[in-house]
Image (cartoon, rainbow, N blue to C red; front, side, top):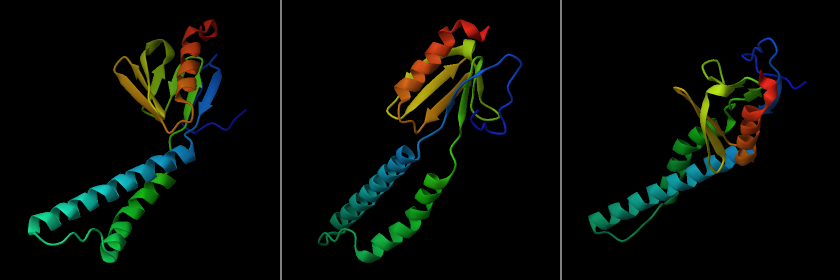
Length: 151
């Protein structure tokens, strides 16, 4: 049996269907896109500042690039290296962390995104992010909802 997170306590008669782990490479790609978008925003700001002051366009110099890297780099590194939540799908619940556990019969909507699945229940929302196959995860959740073994 796969190692479960410490906060997961199975109830009597509950079976593990799947352990859903975020993918590191998808997480890395998302952080890289945030870094590139941040660099573009800084560059557009500097071009706008040059135009507003009526001076020739300078763009990003070496000093500004180093400053940007020292400011944004640690934030991105923290985002990339922080451990993501591990979700456990059982025959009765989708367990996220201590506060997020949705009963399978309480799930009202599944919304598939590019790298994640938004699971909505009665008064609850859980976003499973950084997935390689979010459509497959949604299909697994739908199959678990339809499964007669969760009684």
